[in-house]
Image (cartoon, rainbow, N blue to C red; front, top):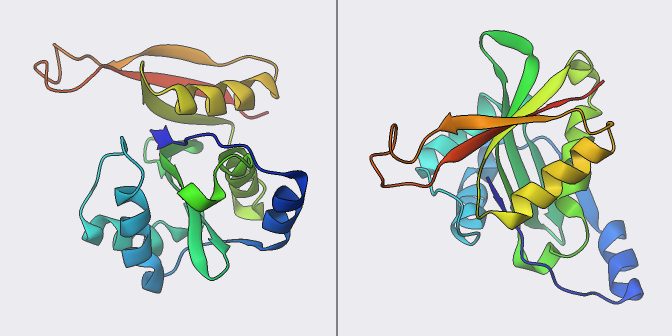
Length: 177
């Protein structure tokens, strides 16, 4: 699930933002900043800060963090599926309010998949609720650049799985090659 609120930036602001972005693997010292970023990005589910520390350590090779002026500007948490090593599951995508409107989520996703150790990834998967327009826009754009081969199915049903307490989560699977 991601959250992005679009805003319009001047061409100068966009050029300056691009020059100031650092894409990298997260590290243990980023855990609290990741937690704060996700807290500032509703409707993302707020996990424990401990979870974010695990993402920044145990799963750092499959996550990407973007720094902007020394602050966390964006973060993608992802992992290889245990039963399908060639599938990358994208758990959350968060973009800080000061970095929105620049296509950063799309750039982070591509930067992650460009890593040498992820070249065997044949598909990405994510889950999205029907109302999360930003997530749909990101993953539909990603799918379109790969030939619109993605599939969408119900993953967790609002009633059958969540007892009406959470919206249905749709699984979007997109081949990367």
